[in-house]
Length: 273
Image (cartoon, rainbow, N blue to C red; front, top):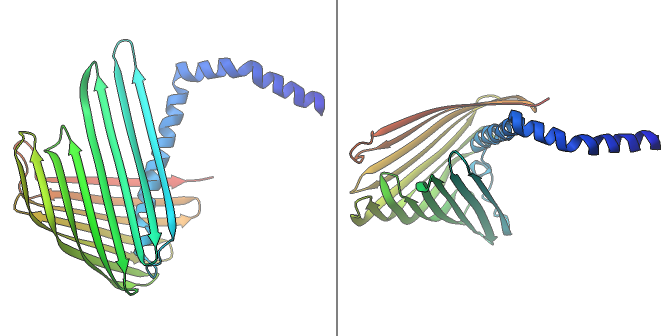
């Protein structure tokens, strides 16, 4: 047995470098990375429909929790590119208070020219009074050097209420006033009163099939933006899950050259064996 084990180690060491080179040249390693990306996106779509915030008695997990990630890639030769992306989330629970901080950013260059430059910051705070009633505060800042608006920020708060809260049906709504700051690509800026309203609905048809519908409305003098995300989650067993979603992004006053409505159909299928 010792001789067999030693032989296996020797074979592994002698084949490691050629195998690595082969997977690089033939693209197998790139394909393997792409498979990981697709699996991660599919799992994210499924977990979005099963968000734990839809249920429960508004229990606050005490203390700090968090995660962060960063990726970088670059090429040199026929084309010179560099891409950097990062994201993170921190939550803190203290008594009946819950705080969430999030950040994300992307930066890309191609042959010396910047072709992607985005940054996002969010804050969400909530104070639970009863299992049904809570107050919330939220802040958001978005920077996009190539988007319809170069800067878009919102700060507001209000009240939320859980209309239904069972394992079969969970529906909560929240709304409140706030301030919105917008700066377009021409440098023109405006700060104005705004209002936000949100709805989160979950309806379990069976033990394996559930419907979700998430709606957010942000309104100000500049425009009214509506985002609706409808999804169907179908879980056959622990190894087979599917989510079909249809997302609509609508704005009443798009910038010249931009459509008022964007529709996205998504299908996620996860199979394990």
